[in-house]
Image (cartoon, rainbow, N blue to C red):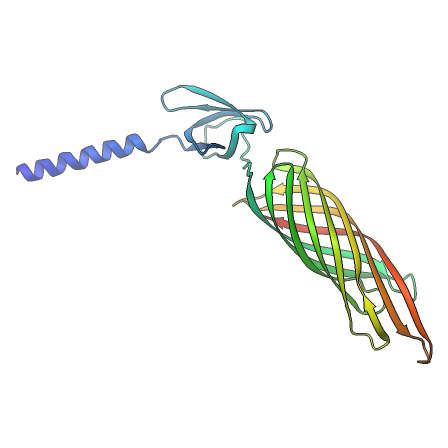
Length: 248
């Protein structure tokens, strides 16, 4: 009997102790120094202040620049929009590009496509730097495929779930073509500034939509129509692209 009572008291003590350690309030703020605070967020203005009421009734106020991450679960939380401010972290970015243009022989519109991937480091909300590679088909008339390798810089202009952003890619585009008329070819410098919008999704995934200008140099050496003439041609692609992307 004494053993049973002792075990029962131990279990009750453990339950009480656990309930004291486990916060009943579900909202959480993680500061940049690593501290985690639980409570009920009563006000949050992106780029302004976060107000957190603790379980004991105390009210704490933090400026947005000291907060690393916010998780909102309480149904009673007011004036809040969940937004994770992730700094000093690695990011991945995928993109699909639509490349309108025309071929070499006419002004008939042609639609090319491209895929790209970037890996980089996000220093803060306003500066991310990385590198990437991709594959692009311009459909210019020679069945050419470009494989750009580039430096990738991004800056988001607002700390909000929907934010305008600027992006710059610069590097070199490798060239491949399977045309029988091409004797020699070479890629060249590429430059790709962009402006668009980021839309915050769930599970740390962000969606992007941007318009960007593509500058790509290339050189072709090819035979003429009768096979006797040899022509050298320097080509500069200048295209407006539409890009859909995912960043996480």
